[in-house]
Image (cartoon, rainbow, N blue to C red; front, top):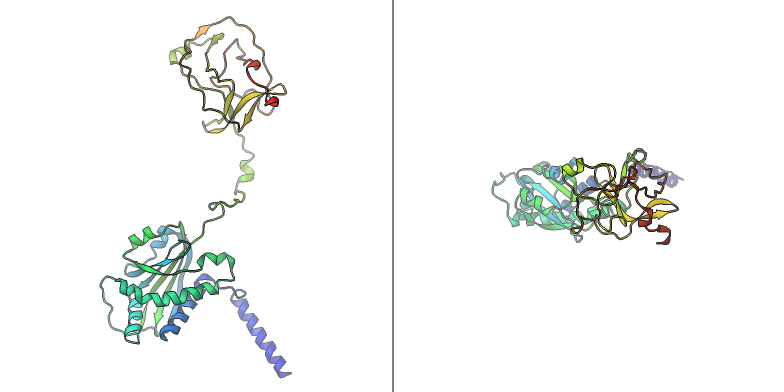
Length: 347
């Protein structure tokens, strides 16, 4: 019975610990700090205590500002091609060199010389020992899959060169205030991992926008433009009812739907359907018709003869279907002969 009671107490303690740690799920910063501590202890018996000072996702320019002026910068390689960075303060680099050359961390003053590839190589063992364990801690979390398979790459000379190496827009920055060998040496350590692109940027189906419902109710003025013509200002001012403007031969077969600001929404074939003017969107059409060089642009008066008119569909309205520069101005109604447009039912 005592064994049963003991097991129950231990189970409760374990459950309470898992609950305190978020159900057993590791955060990125906590997993990385733990992996660094285990790696240093396993490699050299070195006590490494990281204290998290920054755990945030930020743009690349802001992330680069987190690098210290005297940090050794190492590229983290990945088979997917997404590179990260690891940086170490000079005191931390000196501590790694001490423990690998002298067997212990000393208090000798650190040199102010430029870093060399040998200095970077002294950080490679702890990086290559910590990152696989770090990835293993996060392996049960699918959203952390992009943090797998990182490893030591190479030394980067300075922060400016490091900025050229990074090609992602956003980075997960984890910064530690790190103590070695019971505060014998201490300094900053920064890791930067690229954030994966969002679904909208990577080709996934984007979600609804914040103001989508309201914007769908906003009125939009759209014009159907058949063609454009060019005449001088004095001729335009001299236009009178009954004058006729010559158009290109294909002006009555295709059209473009244009917003009030001049943005072209779609092109299509002009025709008629059920007695209404209509445009079939998506058909292969040529560009807006240019001026026919064989046709004179002189404006001349003709006898006013009524032309057959066709009614406009209620969804467009006569005011919104503006045939800009596309009509033979016959009489006051400026009607377009419906015989010149095909029946879209038969197309």
